[in-house]
Length: 129
Image (cartoon, rainbow, N blue to C red; front, top):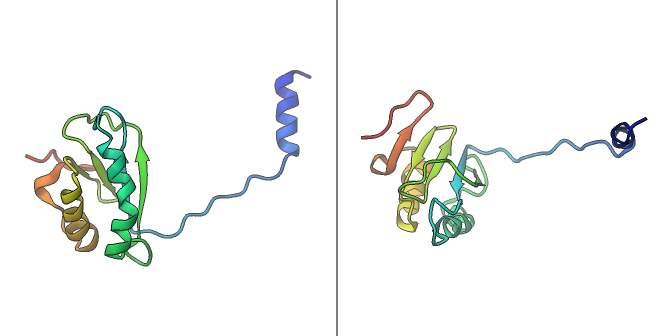
């Protein structure tokens, strides 16, 4: 028996893998925090601010709950911070603190895309003009 076979046998004898759980949510924000999106750390600061912003807007629980995740790179490295709202497929650029407040109020709470900040709408959408 090889070392690989020994490792596989040990894995099968280990504790069973527990299926993860995620609370229900309406939308999922993916925020690029990569170093090329913003070199001054603005993307990470934006991500870090979302918890309090979501609480203030009532997006931290209930039927409008928004989940947030960091992404290391979208390969859309201009005009950052860059963010994507799923399942809407709406891609925002220049997501400053003030613009994030607009996105929260208009899109995440009100259901209306903030068109002047959109650079792509997908799937099947077109690049914003």
